[in-house]
Length: 295
Image (cartoon, rainbow, N blue to C red; front, top):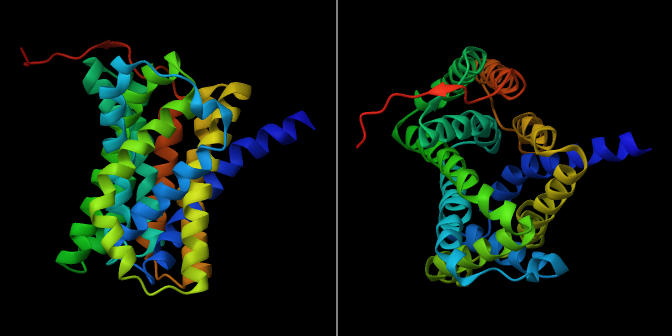
């Protein structure tokens, strides 16, 4: 029973986050991309407020880091995904999110000025080749599609910086308190553009339900479950749930929304996930200094 519960804790965040790209696409039927971003953060913030751990005290001196975290973990990347999905499918957006573990490792290596081990470097190279295979068909369709792919990758890079900023804060405080305050900052940042788009919205039950699920599940519950999973099985094993995101997004995009996905992108998705798994389980990420010309 315990093992089944642990597997469920690992699977739930991946399934929720993989589903989020379909919810975004449905939400765009009712409001613009800034409206989608604002609503999901608002509902996520309100949902997390119901957890007692969110109200834990945080020192005033840590608010600058929290403000930066609100920008790079929520306001910026969550704005990029709906803008991208105006031109590319939810399946493609989700598959490209397979690059998050790869880009996070690259950002961590650059910030630490240390090179990964050879096996991890091989995993990174394999994964980035997969990202290229995913992106090639969309980038060949036109300027709007190419710009959307770049937006998705920029959001993934932003996640890499966010996780480096969040780690020391989450070691000092509980994770939910950090996430909740970062969402408060993101809420303020996205409000000026989000509220006008909501006022112009064309609301119907399905998009409204999808946005509610996007906020409550994707921007709140998934983080809570991931935090519980990290406490039970360790952060490394818990992070394996992110490998489900591209696969879930692909299946739901094709089955629910009828997305057309090229075979090359599907192959690239598998290669990307394989590279991320090699990187994650292949050994220590940082083993030797990285030479830098920076002063």
